[in-house]
Picture 1 (tube, rainbow, N blue to C red):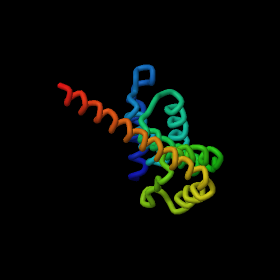
Picture 2 (tube, rainbow, N blue to C red):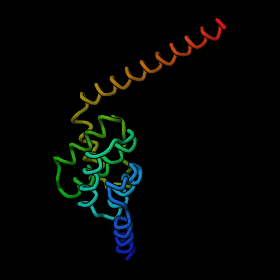
Picture 3 (cartoon, helix red, strand yellow):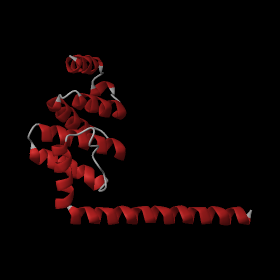
Picture 4 (cartoon, one colour):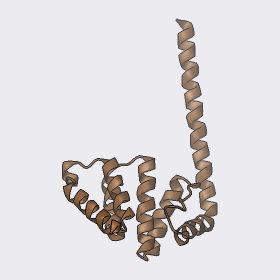
Length: 155
């Protein structure tokens, strides 16, 4: 009964949402994908998530969420190729991401962890790139701070 009510609530929410042409916010779109997934409407979550990723720029956190829900929806629908693609995209953004075992069943968590193990070398390269990017950002921040301090000292 609760699941039926939740599905009905999501259907109402989706019907009340303005179209993309009217400008649904990125955060709202991610929340709709998350909610649609949560009530078990995996086909709609998959469709909506794919459409969202193709049509809009998202923050890294939002893109990770979209890839997680689209990947898991594909997994539950038996589309392993699509699940692998989206979950690997998630891992490329955050190679150390961990699925919540309270949100996903053990088979889904195991699939995700197996994907991580199979791609360990590629993910190590991603970690190195992230570390280099972070180090470069730290250097640039330190350089800006030194330049600011030098300018301040000259005054």
